[in-house]
Image (cartoon, rainbow, N blue to C red):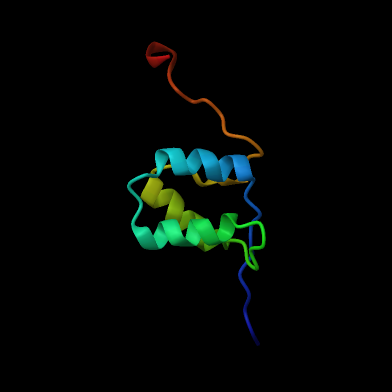
Length: 78
């Protein structure tokens, strides 16, 4: 029996936001993100790939499921 991984469609605005905070990602991660963001991408990231990426970025996994980024900056810093 072949196992498959669930894939997730991440909103373009979320990818853009993540790229603004993820400037320190290794180049191999940046290449994968560029592949997933491509308009003619053949595959979207799996849940496990997003969990790994969220750990590297220190971003909650659930943010990848949003339609648009949220501003979670504490009021004292705004």
